[in-house]
Length: 632
Image (cartoon, rainbow, N blue to C red; front, side):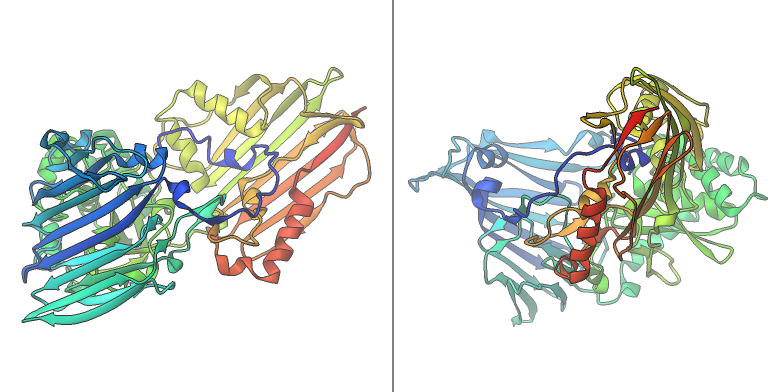
């Protein structure tokens, strides 16, 4: 889901001035004082029946190290779906530093709804345990049991376990099942020992940690965890995706093929079937956004991941991702396209791709719509406020998705993002007056993914706020004393190329130096990421979604002071940078270009001579650069 908070505009990130030094090499594994608490043990046990239903019993103990831990851990929440499961708190107590245990009073254990969205149609709840008299040095102990009477994929069981990015001294997982279990594990640090045996006629799997799980990392900027380096393992009674959730897929297919309610048929009637495929898809989701309200959810209906019926969604005028992706698939089919619901993990950092070797319900938290038309595949997410069928949203790109085609359900990879598919540029002419005031005029352009946030923000913020932040972002200055933004399409939900004329005035050009005025050269966050000291780094470097940015300034009524060559061109597998500074008949022109080619730079690359050479070149060219000017 696109964020509804102001992060600045997408291309704004590329023009903010930063004056930060390269980040120090102070990365390290977190200590108890850093995180505030330590999980002394985390024990999990599953008892699985032949039909996939199961009982889960968990118990854990947390040691409070400082006020941070005391504040964050003194209240524990246990979430469950009361329509598909029952929860019992078996024990909850506080153990003092001296060893005396005090049970939590029953009045301190309260059943609550899990968030405000619960008022709609589900039964998600949470048990809140408030621990009394928690002090530094105390231990919090919880034991609980959840009985699952309904499961996401009827007749099947799966579980995925992540070693959290926390401090855990000991962890164990035991599964006893009526049916045999397949196991997949990625444990590059060899932190777990795995066993398989039998308990009578039943099958048993055990995973126990053999060393502390000290996976939390602190004091690293642009931190990115390489999924392939994390510890994660999963179990499933199904070995192949073609066998996963057949009854649920059949139910969803039946819901998708149902007769369209009158209101949904009305949406189809407003689509020009002669238009290109992308235009038809975007027209549908734009009309859906006008008609239906989305609320983020991945809760179950009747214990499964089945959406509500078309009739129910049409009547209520709201839905979660399962509902809206179902509606979109039904509407696309009415237009003659092949369309199916698809399950996916939504988030900028996807799961380890190898984890999909074994079917597991935990690999998904979102539903989208997969469309085939004209020999091409389209990934449509109708939960977004804007329509972008011609591309792929950042949070669902470059990862497997499970397409619920009843004839051939399969994992299909979504497209990988490319830098040229997300572009911005600014072309600004500055005139410097004798008193130092600056008048600026030019055009800002964005296309592809870079145009998404600008398009979306027009539905969540006032034109005045959008214009203000646009100018702040382009100018890179807090000294804006007046501005004007040209007309552009503000009310279309379809993402398209944007070209926006802008004018603004600044109190001054930026810096004053002993040699004259100083024009600071802006730095993209990708440059900042490339400048982190990676010598002792423990995690990858996060660059963000691939993009291309070009920033051009022509400064009139000035001349450049000095002969220092600020030009450079840097190419690497991770990013490309270039800068060109030229004297012109009227002043100085500056052109910066940034291309980020990958989402992250893995730890393995940090140690290479190529990366060291790349960092040196970036530092020599882009670190705290400025052009010194004198008025003509």
